[in-house]
Length: 247
Image 1 (cartoon, helix red, strand yellow):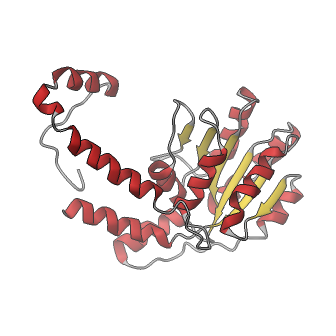
Image 2 (image 1 turned 45 degrees about the vertical axis):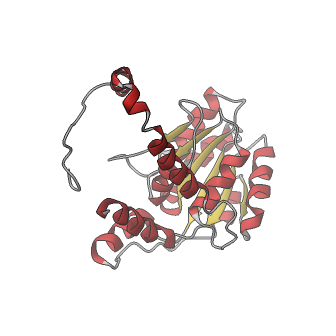
């Protein structure tokens, strides 16, 4: 309601609503297929635009493309609360139900690591990833003790930008500046290693896939991968979406 008031609002079970809409489509509606194919092509182009970007720190789009390339369709990604969840929701393509979980809305930061611990215990034979921001990671790092104790080879990915990224993003979008969102992080690799984890920091964008593959080869303890992330993309996305709405 903040941005628009719908002319027609359909309230109910999504699957049922779509089935009803499909049942009512006529041949004349189906002639508009080219319109939808054009929209689909534009979306696909946007999703894949940064798949080969070599910039560093790593752009969110590029990292999620690389992560997707090393995960099978039934592997599980659990996203914490933070700016990264916006990118996961937009960029991470899923092909099976219940393979991408996002702590959303009014959920607290710090849920991804304990969620990954539970998922790996339930499904020990598939890859399980917890994607966190540096803020959420520090709020739930104690969960690594449990993962180490249980010898669970989850992979924790930390997008590192030394800020509470989502709050900073919202402040910049609303006021053009930000305040009181800076973080003073320790050496996160050494910290993770002190907990008994395998840990690496990505230092070049082109090394991302290799670092992830090494992490997935660890079978007796958690891995923590630190990813310097380019959150300059946040405000670019805000402007892009604003342009779409205004047109």
